[in-house]
Length: 103
Image: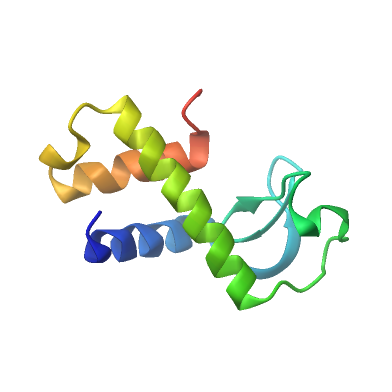
């Protein structure tokens, strides 16, 4: 993926998800931080209480992993994803980021 497109997707997700440098409960009550990173049992933050600060570097790394996962899933769901206009790619990745491939 082009770096410019990745940055646009990141901006879209920050606008939609927000950017929080602490653990909070999302609308579904799931502990979350950064740019909508739902904390998994395997995350080092899994035992941290709500309100605990999270370092920018950790937020950036979690977002990169989450975004890479969303891009990979979008590539599976949409044939020849990058043959579509960038706006379509951005929407598809955003939807997969928020919903996940199974949904």
